[in-house]
Image (tube, rainbow, N blue to C red; front, side, top):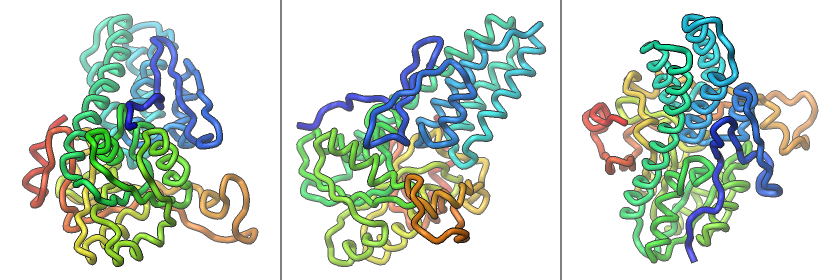
Length: 347
């Protein structure tokens, strides 16, 4: 039985935020309850909350908590302090566009000015609005994605794009869950997603909870199963999409897109309009987050290579638009040529 998710990565309680710590999954469901914007920023940085829409939502709530905590002398000091807080939160994850989309909306409130009480209230309300907007976008993306999936298909996905990554059912995983809820018989291949194993730890956990059949594979098995004809579709999420359709997503996505093209398998991206960054002409302009090499040389604190091993750890790669069959958004499915369809997309 495919039901609604019984968990949420983020719960707002008016004066505090409750975060499901994704670093502890699947072994433990541990929640962080905080009224400190610094704690939320830390949760974003260390991936206790992750997935571009959830990162943007958490960042917005962090600003709201900062607005409630500071005691300025006047409106000018409030605006100055809040801009510092926004910059602090924006430094946590440089690639996820949704974070900056949310922060830009909150900056607009400060630019409009007003009394401290009025600005504080408006910042909190705007954070709630952003959460609602991302939730509604996820609902619609799930329905739009479900339309693409045919009964009996095996769908391959990468990283994690379910309710942990975005409100409601998620983005790429949301379409799969929605299709199963409609009665379609699907099977999922989930890449483990090295180095932090979001696929193995989180996607499998979510699909088990949703009742969706899933098989875990290592990242380098994808080509094997595509060549055998065992995969009918690939769907992933996105962290930032440039004006020409080039897409940054979890490292390894580009490899899947090339393999899908070689094997004549449709490759879809699922993302809300808040993930699009039309100020960037192409993927060459997207900043790629570099994370600690220890994430590669260890697994959950256990060393898997000799001491002193050099490692690099780009968290994302960029898939050129030519490999993307379509992008599933809350406003519909857009298709190539993306340089014509993407710039007209607005949240």
